[in-house]
Image (tube, rainbow, N blue to C red; front, side, top):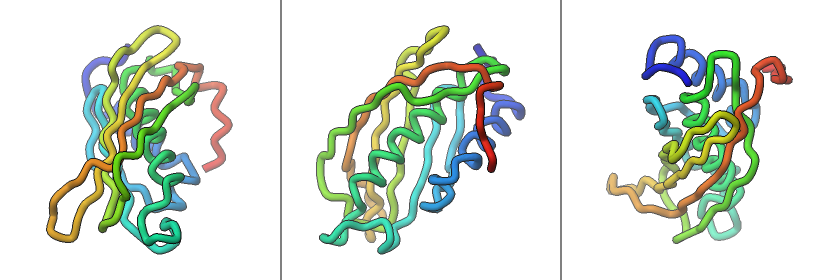
Length: 151
């Protein structure tokens, strides 16, 4: 396991998020990192919406998986990275607002699997946050040598 947050971990998680082309394509920003906890943000654009004008559920699902992967990446060994094994999202209400803010948290970190949960909130025009989805997922801890990144 990694020690509590340090500059190496900060750089590792920043690189983990930045290396994901899909996250770049939806303009995901890394808002906060701590050991076992990460916050990601995606600002609204019409290209991320569904026919009703709300954020598309696929964006919410992808952001949920991404934040869970990022928080799992904060607790693996220096020679490891993580990949998703499974996740489930419950949509609670339409995500209509200025941005999605996903908060991920490690629930149990093991040698080979890390279980995480995520809460996705939608930032409203008046500055309030509404919970629009919750998720749970499992990440596999794998050798960083298996990475196929071409960022």
